Image (cartoon, rainbow over all chains, first blue to last red):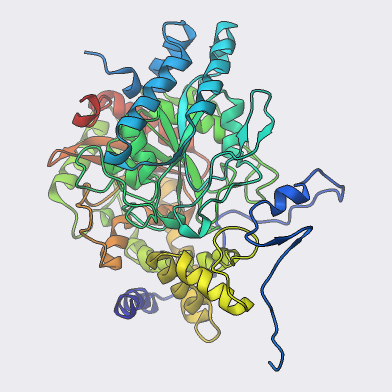
Amino acid sequence: MQIQLSNILEAIETLRDVDTSQVGPTASVIQLENVMREDVARPGLTRDAALANAPLRDDPFLRVPTVLQEGR
Amino acid sequence: MSLPIADRTITELGALLRDRKLSARELTDACLARIDRDAERLNSFLAVEAEAAGRAADGADAALARGDGADRPLLGIPYALKDIFVTRALDDEGRDVAGGLPTTAGSFILEGYRSPYASSAQERLEAAGAILLGKTNCDEFAMGSSNENSAYGPVHNPWDETTVPGGSSGGSSTAVAGGQAVFALGTDTGGSIRQPASLTGTVGMKPTYGRVSRWGMIAFASSLDQCGPLARSVRDVALVLGTLAGHDPRDSTSVDTPVPEYAAALTGEVKGLRLGVPREYFVAGMEPGVEGAVRAGIETLRGLGAEIVDVSLPSTDRGLATYYIIAPAEASANLARFDGVRYGLTAAADELWANYTHTRGSGFGPEVKRRIMLGTYALSAGYYDAYYVKAQQVRTLIKDEFDAVLETVDAILAPTSPTVAFKIGAKVDDPLAMYLNDACTLPVNIAGLPGISVPCGLSDGLPVGLQVIGRAFDEATVLRVADAYERAAGFADLRPPTAHA
């Protein structure tokens, strides 16, 4: 995979040759504007539905392995 | 001689359904029989829901019997969804049914995942009365051009089972070409609808970015992804697009602009249209048989009265490098959510960091890992300007060139893929060679424009696609050109020889 990544990087580095001194960046092709809506409650997923795919459950929570171990 | 039921178009089948010469149940059973017969041979479906499809077909038959079909062209038509769309099952009353179809994105990391909500695409097609058969195989997280990156094995092209069906929507293209679904949805980030359509002799369209809601489509590269149909005729694609298109407040990049009556645009007339042929699209490495078929297609349109104009898109050869910075960068951010905590695979460890690394290390395949690494590298401090910002600047150049050319012509004609379907395994060890499959399609995503691939003949017995690219939100002209071509060219009945066996 190291060689493959090097080859890909070599190919994408050819962009260096393009003169972009007068060009702005495009992050999105459509004119993005903030989308506003009224701040009202709407029906969403029930807790059960939201947790149904969790690999480790401890209702009504998700169970997560230890985040910080002592001494670290 | 007329084609078997399972191989016909929405347009033909819709007429038979409305005249009650065929029931939705019979049609659905014909598709399910093909899915079943070719399950191993083609490997195009990851999940099939025969019972739910049967129930939906009976519902459609009841509606058809009431005469509901007149303004509902998809009523009773069986279809398949690429396994990138999240799905949930509904009962006859439209209520959620527990244990619906799984959604895997072709990845082990989502094995067994069942979505608690439906994609907009599923909702809209369900409301239109179309019948969901199942979920189609695809490259993992839609990253690939051959469907060989699926965790669930490659899909085989029904034209020649030793070749690929294209990708990443290879299960969808095979389902449509192989008579397993009358139409299917795919997603297209760099060509993933159009290239598999080209390689399987089907019609596939990527709409303008913002035309169709991405709600419920598992994100790969959010500024490039679009969803669209694969079908057996341009008219069929127009019918499905008309159902999918339109504003959706749940996707803030979906654009609130009127959706025209696409079928009305299919006049068969191209007289007076100016169609540009960009010389940079006839690239080195293009197969002579492909170039010949595409150039013959262009001549057909000239013969129909279109004015063919030589145009130039000079930054075309920068498209690949630009794409392989922007798409992995966005993917690396989008795929951070697969952490083994909230859903999907978890490789349990006694500590959170190990949980992440084991889950992601064992859950993602090599291509996905490659792209996450490329993307995080391109976004990392110190390289951000040299890679990511640079690619966004070149993106501006590519888009500006398209916009300038499309001020002088009504649409652009180009090859879809530089080659016909290649052998399974031929390019798996050379990612760069694989990426070159999309050289003619990915600039269209970079610019956010609509593009369609329509069959333009065979080379070495395998299908070739002609690409029509249009102005933003002008799918109507793209469809009009493709439909006029399809009617004149005589390839509309192209089907894989094995389909009728």
